[in-house]
Image (cartoon, rainbow, N blue to C red; front, side):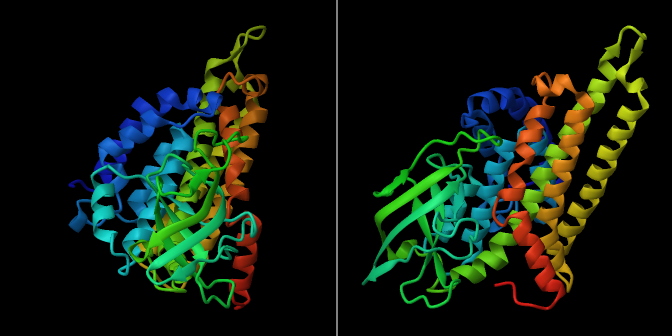
Length: 382
């Protein structure tokens, strides 16, 4: 798969404009899976963006991934979230050398034939994704797993789930292993439909695994090594991608507000809304916030590509600050556009709802603030 960073960003921009944007309102209104968007992502090669070149992927790094995800989120945040979770799962698959099916799965992802997702958080431990309460039972080469995974993006739609569970002899909260669970595995079911406030097309729903029997070949990590893989190969990419989604949503709201101020008029005065100083000031605040977040997003991506002593802090900060910025920007957009946004005449109302998700999606903003504080105080995170 050929092409540099600019090629993939341009590909994403065209796809977002021609496919995601066309279906975004209907996806949101009906809370439906964005099948057209995901099919277009698969056909374009973007599902294999971060897959190593040796497996037919593009081999792109964090900067390209962040740029592509942000572009997708500007047009349809639901599709961008599906993409983010797929890439995060892909990084888990690529990051382990102990998974017997690693090569074939990566080949399928690069070819656009396989969509994956993460299934980490559980009902019993809520947003504390690092502490599953489920525990695998091992009998020879057979691994039996029962778990209730909460709010799994692409539930019932992804071809596979990367599932975390406590290993059989676990002692600490973080003693877990990762398993590769195909969607059609016996005992796997989606336990309800998704009808959320925002991100209404991302198919986020509980997934139940009831006495799921898996061969040893489906175990992705040695016993107890799931947590290190999550920290090293999954969490940084998820954090960066989530930040990119938030920046994309905020950018979309800012652009929609700008267009509204230019197009709408105060007919009794013969002036556009843009003639009002207070509305221009709000737009300026939004733009400054978006531009600031974009600079920091680029900084975090560079830190991930060239790790240093400040990389962990930057990664922890990325999702938290972008999530808060998206809340601020979309709130300003709603107030600036007034009734036009409240009555759903603009994309601003959808942007406002979609922006709510990041702050409460594990790791939540509150948890990230605690992690950042612990890091500053040289305390262990877990």
